[in-house]
Image (cartoon, rainbow, N blue to C red; front, top):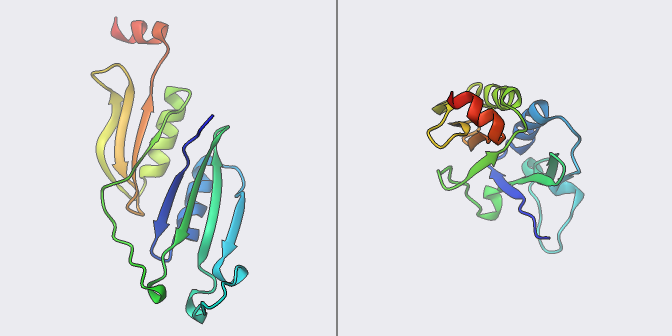
Length: 150
């Protein structure tokens, strides 16, 4: 079965961002590869970029992995923070939805506070302190939906 993993690029602060995400979700990094660890023939990594992250992975849940790398301006790469990527997290409970929402939105900008949504889910969205857009969406089981509606 095909699965989707999200890959993010940061402008030199991948390690800081992933330490933060790890503090929210727990777990251990599947890999942390720095540019100095993976020499590429014909490409000289400037000393200032050697410790930046070439690849990092953090498992979230049972089957998903959040991955990222730093962009290197020394290689002509430019990261432009935009609104073209949102990460959608689907927790197993309202309590977990609240925990994730509150932890990840700390220091960020809340677009929609987490609350019961018109379509029946418990939903909120925000941009975290690193500029990444998130959606937290808990879809309660049918019996819980009926209890909330009454």
